[in-house]
Every structure is written in structure tokens, then in C-alpha cells.
Amino acid sequence: MTTKSQGCLWQICQVLLFSAGVMSLDCNLLHRQQNQFNWYSLQLLQTMGGKIPLECLQDTTAFQFPEEVLKPKFPQYAKLAVHEILQQLFSIFSKNLSQTGWKKTNVKRFLNGLNLQTVRLEECLPTAGNISFKKLKKYFQSIEDFLKEKNYSTCAWVIVREEAQNCFRHIDTLTKSMKN
Image (tube, rainbow, N blue to C red):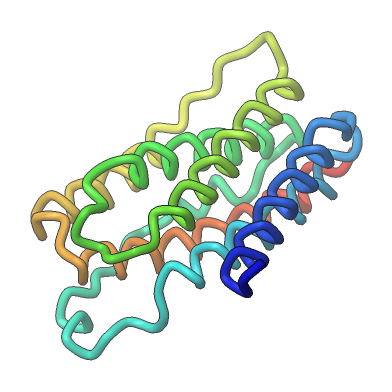
């Protein structure tokens, strides 16, 4: 078997092991599983592209993540916020990626991981209560508006990928609040 095939097989095995771990953990250990997922997602985002190219620096923008989301009053609120962030990221990264030049397999792994984690979180979310994340939705809408304004250019996607990495750093903060 060639080295390329072995590498692909190894990555598939990692995804399967990750998936098995995700599905086997109970909700009391969700914060540990979320830490693993964050690390995996950051690795995938980094492999999708390197640093921001110099020609893209003119396109940078300061997206304002709503800081109040990072100070949840209850562990359940943190879970709901992480769920919302993952859903929004899935929505953004599910469209108009043709100009990115990213490997389709990496994008698929990233989207599969987002979907898997979203489903896993849904198993652990409270059934009662409806928390509105208006500011968080507005934040993600500004990212989508930025992509549209830049016609989903390569530079726009590089910047959004960087912002997605920041989102996973925010998820790390929220994950610490998930512990009971």
C-alpha cells in the first residue's frame, strides 16, 4: 500500500475512533469529549490552510464575538451556546467553498465532525426552556455577510477559517463551564 493510501486509511481510522468515543460518553463527561472535539476541529482547520497570505491582509475584519455568551450562568446554558456555535459553523462551511482550494476530504471531515458533535450535544441538552442567542446569531450573520460581500473569495474564506478557529477557542471557554 502506498504512503498516501496509508495516510488516508489512518485518518479514516481516527475519525471512526473519534466517532466511537463521541457516541459512548454519557452527558456527565461531555466536557471531556468536547475538549477532544475542539482539538480535532482546530487541527482540521489548520490543515485546510496555512497563515493568512499577505494579499489577504487588506480583507481582514474585526468580527465581534458576543462576550456575554462566554459567561454562562448554568452548565446547560454553556451546552446550548456550544450547540448554537456548532450549528452556525456547519451552516457557513456547508456552502460556496469552491474558491478555497481546500481538500474536499478535509472539509468533509470537518463538517462530519461538526455534525456528529451537534447530534451528540442534542442528546445532552435540556428539553425545557428556549434561550435566544440573538447576538450570537448576529455575529454569525456578519460572517456570512462578509463572505457574500467578498463573493466567497479565497481571501474571505481564509479570514473566516481563522475566525472559526477563534470560535473553537470560545468553545473551549464554554466547555469549562459545562462541568457540573
